[in-house]
Image 1 (cartoon, rainbow, N blue to C red):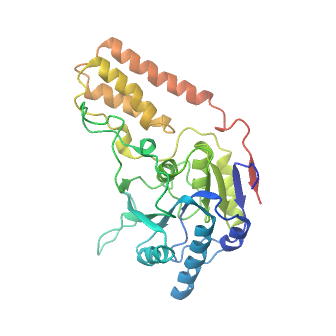
Image 2 (cartoon, rainbow, N blue to C red; image 1 turned 120 degrees about the vertical axis):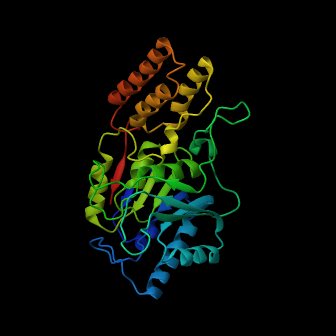
Image 3 (cartoon, one colour; image 1 turned 45 degrees about the vertical axis):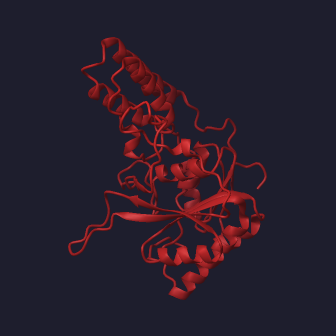
Length: 331
């Protein structure tokens, strides 16, 4: 692995795992095939039930081997196999932490029955001792209260993020591309800067992109050369914020009646909740001005407009990568 920050290995996951030393990975975040006949080009997403379970057991065994003792694993899975995945993780003596529901507002429409509007994410840890950075993933409070922790609240285990729509500029041809905001929350919560994050099914490169912009080292396995090239292109795109956000992050608390408390909070809110979401700062500032229009003076509004302008200017002047000398390896 060396000192490279982004390392994409163009091999089958089970083969690529052989190159990873024991207890060397801080976090695994992955979206494996759901066995739903998706077209991934070179790989088959339709195995017999027994073969799919065996395959799952094999890559989970390898995941446990490479995870550090304080490591965490997050796995996306659909309804058909989520219960089997849970059982396999328990059988391997992983520690259950959370069953996360990703709720989305767009998807397949049914005419008979209820349209599916969620996927599930299982969070397990290798031991009872694990990293969890609560402050990094808090959401804004609904009300300003002295007794409230205005640094924010726990986001809970139901997360609403929109799909990456086919008309979105960041959308790739990968059939199961996930929003960057989802990965951002898991990566910030369960790893620190310079930690190593692994995605055994790298796909469109979402995990790699988020690691690139949050100062994590990344290792990805991807059997498709097409998707490796897609990831390479994606990592070389200018960054102006992740492609999705929990809408609660732009929420303006009620009862910010005092001007000086309000000004201090607005500045802190941007720093706390809108890092890596520069495009949403304008939306937040406009929401503040609308909610408190009857209280905000021309001077206070000018302050907020200046803050908004400064963030836009800083974004335009940002280098292509967070690292001064990014390093990539595509095997």
